[in-house]
Length: 213
Image 1 (tube, rainbow, N blue to C red):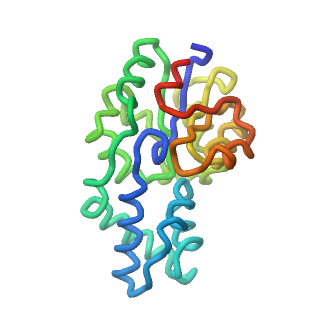
Image 2 (cartoon, helix red, strand yellow):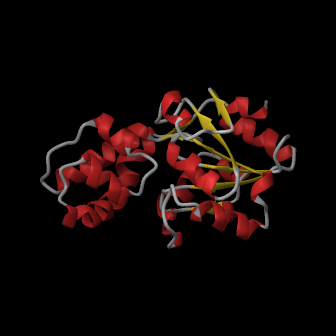
């Protein structure tokens, strides 16, 4: 492998969470007595902090986005978990990377209260342990700031020059580049090839197993 370490985004890169996220956002808005949002607009905010999703994609007033995020986290397990799956080839590819002694971690905008159970239930922890997962509740600046990637590299003792950041949005790629890593966009997630190219990734792949190439 060209790289010794890989930092993965979660939503839209390892797991297809779009339907679960849209259902939970709409459920949150319903509880707050607010109108439903455009599902396409919601999907475009995946990868950003929850408060930004509600601020950008919904009619939630600015002074209620924190409340919306709290409700979302509370109802997410009941509304979303049955609608989340791994993308094709993810577990097999992680197994092969594990056998190659690649150090792997997850850098996600998701809170640990949902990220950790999802990693466990989807089988990811066989190859990426929970202590190699870094989420929004690390009290760091969110993507596209480099903080999550820098936190992961510092904790794991790895260098940016040997590290690849893999994600489905420009926020992931901008984070990786700002942290001194190489970057790889995946075109099957929440943003298009054209959007990803705007962030000048070092690589683009159309499927998760293509990472092995």
